[in-house]
Image 1 (cartoon, helix red, strand yellow):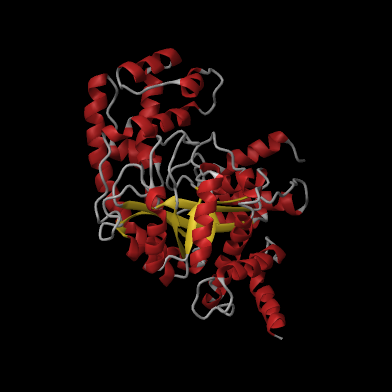
Image 2 (cartoon, one colour):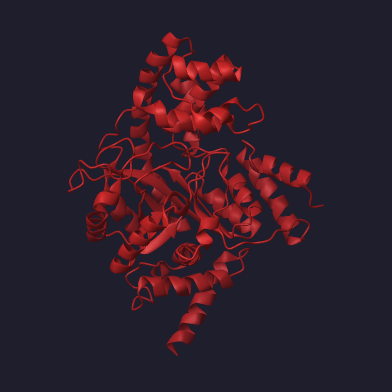
Length: 452
């Protein structure tokens, strides 16, 4: 029987710490969907950039897929920092739920040996460092991606240890218990399964320390303001004082990320933030799609974890030209975070250079909605087609690498990127999501008809 209680049980079981339990529940949910005991409406909305517990998130991969299914999304994709640990489970979950699925990873890269080496690009905390997403990883390249990311995760953990030492030197004199790397930090991630330990993990443990030490909300706010010198104002103060706020820990994490992280943050080394050209070359070598993650100047952060700051808008034209020169075929951006003016400028540049545009909103808090109605606006709706094209690319290139959207021997090479995206999107929409591998038959049949 389809009921709120039943759906809540499913959400809980799909977020179980035991992966075997999650996969077993997926089988049960698949049976319920197949028999139409649970149903849903499907909107045009999609999200290709959901974080999971393999970097930082309230959601295990299957739970993230289920939340997206409940939110009526047609597509959901996992993108974790320096990790593809969620990839296999995400693909299994989307197939079981009958929705489009994609997988990728996000990584810091450096532009030190470029004209932008001393600029703030799209990383709030660093000069010359840029976040890059690798989207549409073929299933048979997931293991190679993990091999590429393993040494980067190790380098990040060397930095995490130093950051933790610096943090403990601040909080212990304040009367808070020290955070231990081995017993506190590592168990909070899936590091032993290919997960990545991030600054958010460190901050979340600090949040727990604070909430345990100051269970009274007004005393917690006073400690933040007076001892930690963290400003708690306006809407944030209201949320932290609200007795019925179920998202308080994530709200507090966002506040600390914005206003306290700089006190113990350590800049990534060149070994951790590898040269951006190395990331592009690797992604293309496995048939994936490297995409520069446009941020744009920030006024008021929609996620509450970024201060007002200028990023790449001042030199965007020069930056995009450089990215194209080193092989980038795509740009990714988040419509809820950008103004229409910012998006239109970026879109004009993408058209000029025949770049693919990929959307996604980085879900990493229980407060965030999986919905993205901004995609249905007239200046963003084409991003929905691009998402379906990404699903098609991933499935097709797994079955036959020549069908990768940017493969040199792609049968549609004479077409420009927008034309290819239109074809791939149509093929993905025509494919039964419970049998995504059937897309190759559709592509070959449709292409044969087009040529005849």
